[in-house]
Length: 267
Image (cartoon, rainbow, N blue to C red):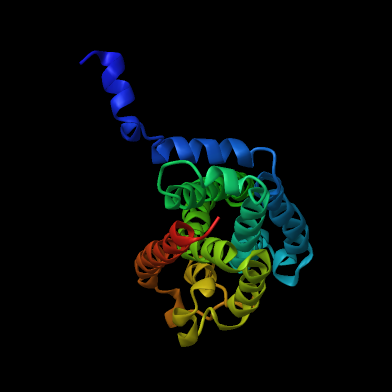
């Protein structure tokens, strides 16, 4: 049998199967011109610059602790806004593909690969936003309090980002299953809960509050913005690894549920 005959004899053997790396790269290219990229680039300076002015005129700032107030309040808003940011990422990325999804889903490869690729692309985009926030905060800390203060910024920004990965997966699964309205509702509810219960025992059972819970010991601040008292048990860093693991477990569970839905969804 010739090569040509062999090719025509088994048409079913030809399969369009882009790797997950390719899918992530394509998703990142698509996100270059959308709302998620604007949110990622605008949010860090919007957080850092106005809050710096507020810190400077605050009673503590006028007393000489501008950096302490600036760092703590910036991380507080970073943790509280995470659920809403995840919801906006997920809702807008899913909504952008509504028109082309029927065509894309006809290709002969598992649909859930698109879901996982989109999650990883949004996670990378969020990491870029975290990196920009880290640079801005570290520069402010270096100018106001020296290298030791600047060194606090990377961990203070990165740990809440990692703790928020589970919320991003949850929002993405909700957007795929129930639409962007349900996804937005998760974000709004999560932001409110993060600001009220993140530093309580109930916060452990609310994934949207985990980024703010990670901020509490790192910034030395309650979810409502009140500084922790010296010796407060909430200063302990022991919960941080637990939050990271819980976030990864939730990510896997939410993506598994979302994958089951998109694989079975009718065109």
